Image (cartoon, rainbow, N blue to C red; front, side):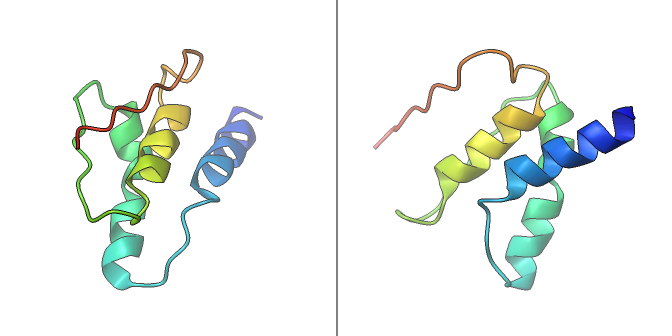
Length: 75
């Protein structure tokens, strides 16, 4: 049962990340691994590329998902 819940949680967190480029798919494949880490993640990219969506996916898959997500725009 735990595996099913985890798979559903992964699917829901990654559902808004859409793309077909091999580099994108490779990066998204690592999101659940990054979410389990205690390390800080720096997400960079051009405006409109979905950095905040990736950050939210990492947050919702992390052990801290019970706490609020606070996006910080450093521009």
